[in-house]
Image 1 (cartoon, rainbow, N blue to C red):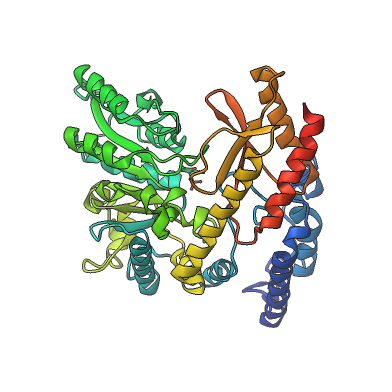
Image 2: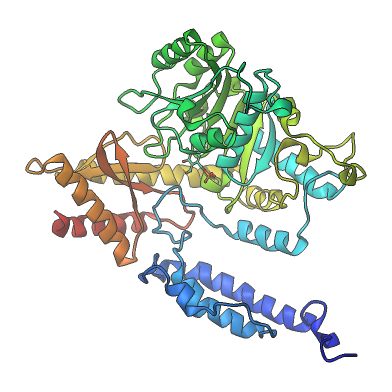
Length: 486
Ligand SMILES: Cc1ncc(COP(=O)(O)O)c(C=O)c1O
């Protein structure tokens, strides 16, 4: 044996006894993290580059003990994170962690299977089908809607718009877009409140960013169907080809809900694909009193819902339901010889519905969350978040120094300062300072948004650990910092 050859003990995996010990320690670490997360600073204070500076610039050439690696995790990495699972993290649509979700992720990591075809992991494929059916029923979607799991809503919307583009019958899968002067411009419509993932999809699909028409919304930030139809008619008169309309149930800034039924009527009249972005708001359908939000979505060609936003499944887990899955297959099904042996003709091969071949076993964690909480448990948690949002809204409405700037339809509250002496730019600046000041305390985390030129504090509730006390403490913090922000 030459000196260059590795010693036999450096091959294979780590020693099983040591792995078991570290796994037990990691289990305690995770349980401690969850139990004590509320006592942590939410966001770090270090400037950009601090983590890079604390780490070696090259990988070690010799093995390092796991203990040393885990020590660095505690010392360098964890303090440099924003703790999205903190009960006072109110930014974005916070992706909540849950105990069953964490267990599902841990076990999926150990299994490391790929649900690309049925044969490559039958139970992963079939569990995905089962979980998608459970969710479809909880959301009250028609049984013509069939699902596929993707990582994020952005990717789900990309696939929906790819299907919509193929449904135009322009042979784009085969011939592409470039150099085809006979093709019309393709147009996609969404409200002026819709998410930027629509532009990203359109950019990726070669439709061109400028071919997204942002349709105006009413005073509750809902698309105006007559304005939508006017844009469509104008485009058709100009020789353009409408490709898809995207309606939103729960917009990012204010959780407004587009009138899906009226939009569906416009789409049907002009034979246009309707995609509904219910990434956040889809969860409302679980509540009898929340079903209004998803009214009409049954008429949609495709619907995206993100259980990683408001159904307590950890990032990432996004579902696209479509009554036209054959169009996804028409765009994406492609079986090279080296996969043919594993691509059974009489079973579901989820690789056929997207650009991804290797697919994580995401259904496992969703199955564990849906079982461990039960439909009633999911409902109770969603309802509590809405209650907390409304409670906060009532405190804001009662305070002469603040005002709500959008209706509270779900569990997001948008508000601003009220000050007759200040100009709009001063008010907007003050709001930004309030958000920065709250975040700098490390005790709560907020984001801001723009609502028709008005900067608003945006507070989103969605974490299973968040209680009324956390919301009250954050509100007290906002009021305290606002005194010095003006
Ligand atoms: C309404 C809406 N749609 C889509 C997205 C994109 O979600 P994802 O991060 O899963 O791509 C978001 C993100 O917050 C959103 O608010």
